Every structure is written in C-alpha cells, then in structure tokens.
Image (cartoon, rainbow, N blue to C red; front, side, top):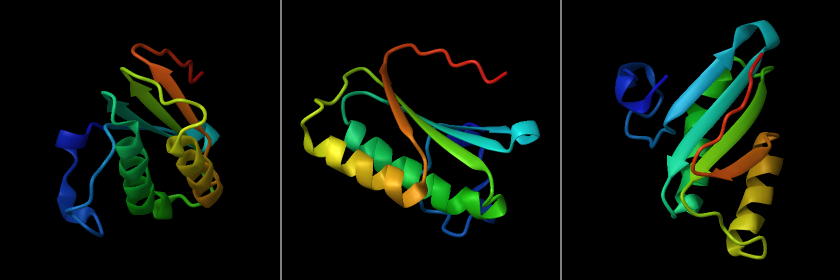
Length: 107
C-alpha cells in the first residue's frame, strides 16, 4: 500500500507517520515495510516503527523486513547504527539500507 492511498480512518492513531510502502506476501506470512528517504534516514526508522505499530497487530506471527532506500547512506559508526540495532531488536525485524535503486525478489 502507498501512504497517500491509505484510509487513515481505521488506524489506531490517524496522525501517525507512515512509511511509503507495505508489501504483504500472505502465502509466506511476510510483511515488507519500505521507506524512501533523501538523506534524513534517521527519520525513516521513526516512520517504519510507527507503521509497524499500527499494522503488525493484525498479523503478529508474520515475518517482518524493513527497507530504507535513500540517496545517502549513513556511516557505520554513526548514531544511526545504534538506533538501527535498537529498532531491529525491538521489532525483531532486520533493516536493510540501500542507496537509490534497489530490487528485491519476493518470489
């Protein structure tokens, strides 16, 4: 689903920040959360977390993967990496960060 197309009426908090795309592969019980960012990738984690909190309760047993596609990649030693590890631990969801174009095969 694309953020502008989501009907916010059914969300627990209609004011929450949502990520750009959510791809659900029901046959494999997978949820893929995708956020497109410029260089403010730290904000991406907040949007991913907010979206997961809103949508994951409907399928708590689904496997979750998060993707950040950005024009700049944060440095490995940055504060972002600490936040990323905390996020992955909290949501049991790996976060992959790629710059510009990224293709992932869901089949």
